[in-house]
Amino acid sequence: MIGKGYFGRYGGAYIPEVLAHAFLELEKAYDAIGHSAAFCERLDALLHNYVGRATPLYFAEELSEAVGGARIYLKREDLAHTGSHKINNAIAQALLAKMMGKTRIIAETGAGQHGVAAATACAILGLDCHIYMGSVDIKRQALNCYRMELLGAEVIPVDNGSATLKDAINEALRDFASNSEDTHYLIGSAIGPHPYPTMVRDFQSVIGREIREQFRSVEGRDPDMLIACVGGGSNAIGMFYPFLDLLSVRKVGVEAGGRGLLPNQHSASICGGREGVLHGAKTMLIQDEQGQIMGTHSVAAGLDYPGVGPEHAFLSRSGMAEYCYVSDEEAVKAFHILSETEGIIPALESAHAVAHAIVAAAAMRDDQAIVVNLSGRGDKDVEQIARMEGRL
Figure 1 (cartoon, rainbow, N blue to C red):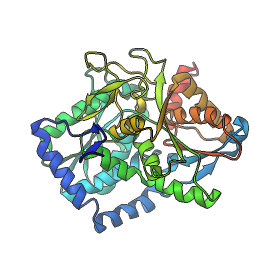
Figure 2 (cartoon, helix red, strand yellow; figure 1 turned 60 degrees about the horizontal axis):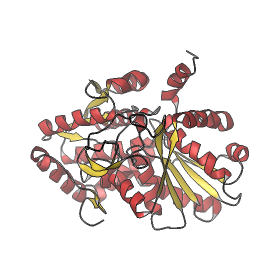
Figure 3 (cartoon, one colour; figure 1 turned 135 degrees about the horizontal axis):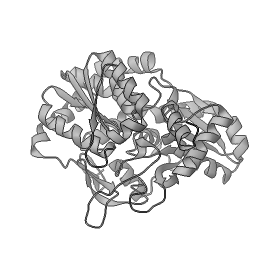
Figure 4 (spheres, rainbow, N blue to C red; figure 1 turned 60 degrees about the vertical axis):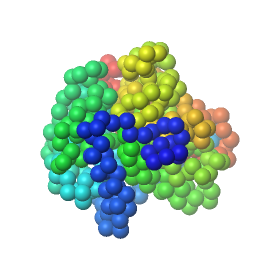
């Protein structure tokens, strides 16, 4: 990190003047309130008693036997309240906002899991909640939309552009620019201007800290490999960060290869992108030679985003982590394999990580071990898969 808000050459705060005060206020509040004893004690209590942490580290014995090679463990973020890792960051940011004196929360969502988590956090903390969501994502994640409304949130459709996550973020930023006095923008991934990538990473690092402790208690050592899916990258950076000092532990981020690395057919920002600035940060983006953001595609709505968190861009460039991609077809196959071998239906986002773990484990020794971050459960995706396969 060469300066505040930067990870090597990536990061920063590329924002209009109208937002400068709001981001400076948030940075100061995170430094002061976010590290205070009162905040940490309240957050720890909520994570334990409400979210259900620590989530289990589960040895997937049947899957490991079917695949051969390395043992596969699953970090069961799907068992956290609301069904994904998103609640870790959502409840922490909502608590920070409440202690800052904010009364209104806005958020963006793609797969809907962050929207549900944000609505849940607002319900328990007594905050007004408004969720921006692309109309394309609303159609494929109708169940999560209803869950948000049940929790008291307003879901605001976004029809601009591709009507997916990127466009929802654009609208949320416009709202924040107009209403920052009483509003906090609860970003769901490790993206955006400083301090969001750092703040979200810190709130999600509970995942990696628990894995270090849990794996050592089971195996008496550190895992050989960590695998997590990467869209914006919050579940992956939360998993990787507590292990960055351990060079012996391979960290592998799995992007959405969609239908292949062709224009408008994937969401693999590191594997198939180039440097640029989007949503207030310099990072790796899916863009053309003129710097125009290109269309993206993924069967998993939560990975359907043309950028990646700037710390992931840095980890890739520095060689501290590896990044690959998995196709829609491979992810759907892994969705079925995990369901059938372990009785665990993964989110399509998480299925990308499972798909790579199946290949990686088979190429490793049987005295080695992989931990996969099972970032979410697949209830939200069952109808989508059933329709794709002609079952409905």
